[in-house]
Every structure is written in C-alpha cells, then in structure tokens.
Amino acid sequence: MSYLATPSTAPVTLSTLNKLKAKGEKFSCLTCYDASFAHAMNQAGIETILVGDSLGMVVQGHDSTLPVTVADMAYHTANIARANRTALILCDLPFLSYSTLSDAINSSRAVMQAGANVIKIEGGRELADTVKALAQAGVPTCVHLGLTPQLVNVFGGYKVQGKTDEAATKLLEDVQILQQAGAAMFLLECVPATLAKAVTESVAVPVIGIGAGVDTDGQVLVMHDMLGVYTRKPAKFVKNFMTDSTNTTGDITGAFAAYHQAVKNQTFPTDEHTF
Ligand code: KIV
Image 1 (spheres, rainbow, N blue to C red):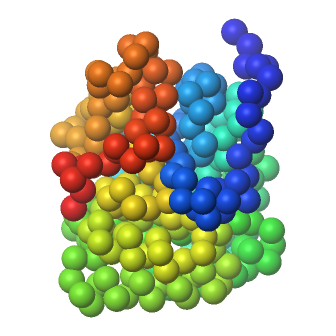
Image 2: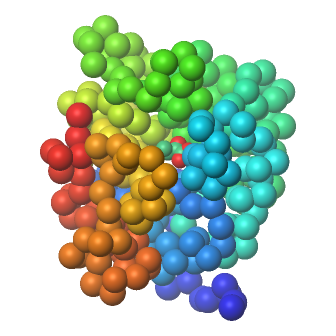
C-alpha cells in the first residue's frame, strides 16, 4: 500500500481556515492517530486532523489522557505526517509538558519536527505568556478551553463547563487575553451553544467546537466515537456516521465524507448533540 497519492486539493493552512471563517464556511476536523486513517481522511476532504492526546484512552487504553508523553505524541504525529497530503495537522501537547516556557518550547519542537503544523494546549488566561513565547518562536497555538480533559482531577469528572454567568464571562475574557497574546485558534469543548457562538463571534481567529453547538467555525469529533467504536458510553455530542444513512458507501471513508458534508451544510451538530 502506498500513500503517495497526488493531492486533489491544495494543502490546508491557517490562512485557509481564516478565509473560511471570513466567508462563514464551516470546516471539519477529526482526531487521527495513524497513516491509514490520515489517508482516508484526506480522501474524504477532512480539512484538519487533530493528533489528540485522547490517544491515551482510545489507543493505549488508559482511563484519562494524563499518562500520554511527548514521545507518544511525536510518534503518532510522524506516522500521520508521512501519509497526510492535504489536512492541517494540530497536535496536543500532553499533560505537564508545557508548564514552563522551556518545556513548552521543547515539547513543541518535538511534535513540530514530527510534522505538526499547530500545537494545542489546554487552559485559560494563565497560558498567555506561553502562547506569546511560542508565537515569538514560530509555533502557532490552538488553545483548548471549556472542558479540558487534562484537568479531569480538578473538575472531578468530564462535565459541561461555562454554565454560570460568571464562568461564561471568564471564558469570554480568557479568549480575548489569549488572542491578544497571539493564539492562532481556539477549541471549545462541552460548553453551552450560546456561549460558543458568542466566543466565535468575539475573536478573529478560527474556533473549533466539540459539544459546543453548530455556530463554531469548525467541528471536531474523536474518530473512534464517530465510527461507533466505543469502549464507554458515548457523550451526548457524539454521532455515529458509520451507520448513518448519509454514509453512501458504508465504509470508513464514507463515514468521514458524511461527517465532512454534515459539518459543511450544518446538519451536524443538531440540538440533540448540544448543551
Ligand atoms: O485529545 C483530543 O482528542 C481532544 C478532542 C476531544 C478535542 O482534545
């Protein structure tokens, strides 16, 4: 099997995503952990691939993302980068791998040299100095806010965030501070749709959502979830595209293409998947 297919579309860059946001056109993102699935995602037109530290749960079988290492992230990113021709590759920096500026630079170096285009870190305004230092070093960041799985022990579980007026105001302030610091993108997980809409409209950079309603600029799902490969009860925001009637070929590439189309025409997520 060869992955050296000629790309049918130009590679997606941050500038592509900014243009899509300006036009009001939605973009798709899926988590991915290996070359074969990256190839299928390219075939289906998925615009952005997230090498998520969710690999700790869906690939390695841990109960949380906390055991994942920078070496794990670099390994999976390199496998994807060898096959990927068209998608922008986002890569998570794992738990406690960006607590100091020097850790953030070293961890970013490892995953970007493996093929990541953008690094993703979890937190709020406390990351402003990190985002600034990375931007100055030539590392674009996507900041993940709302339900940040690396803080599962602080939250006491995986719970919807930003439900009170106070929490919503803080999140809106956080994104302004982080945008000012140089964040290239945001990802919102498990927040009320009204808050996600307000955040998306308040920043100039693209915002990806998961469990955040239909109004964010892009959508992401964990690949295993949207293929119906569950080891635990799927979250409310998950839809199985493998068995969906819009998957016209009935195979995995068909599921990716059905998801991509549903994101583009805003038929996913619906109220059923939204908080
Ligand atoms: O690690 C991951 O897969 C993620 C998604 C849940 C957005 O961060």
